[in-house]
Length: 133
Image 1 (tube, rainbow, N blue to C red):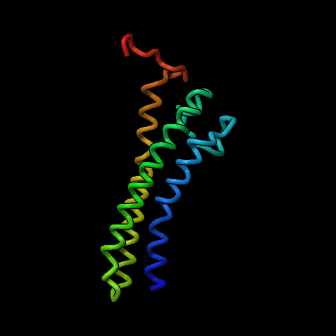
Image 2 (image 1 turned 45 degrees about the vertical axis):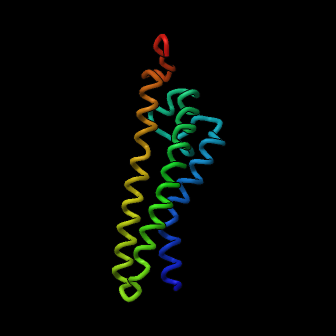
Image 3 (image 1 turned 90 degrees about the vertical axis):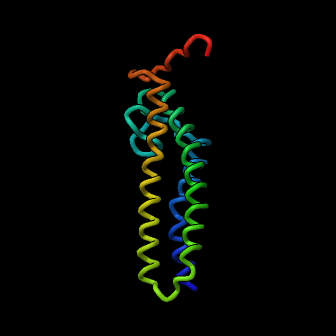
């Protein structure tokens, strides 16, 4: 039983981290633009406005992705529960799940980068909204 508890907890770390980071990014954007903490990309660091936008947007995306990954990962691990006699197989399955979570976590960056480019020009100034929008 300890094996299953460990496998479940390990596979919930990435979704839990995304949920927590999402909440932190939305509520507590770092005060200064820096290269150490926060959502750091060349677009997010162009101005204070892009910095705040990136944190709010990425926080929302991370929270949603984390919640979806949490549910999907729990369901996938529940499917493995009957494989008690094959701990190596379960370990490989859990490693594949963790790898998939990492891919999804990295892919969650793209919506924020796209939103930054859509809403701000190359100098970090907000684009004018089209008339009637």
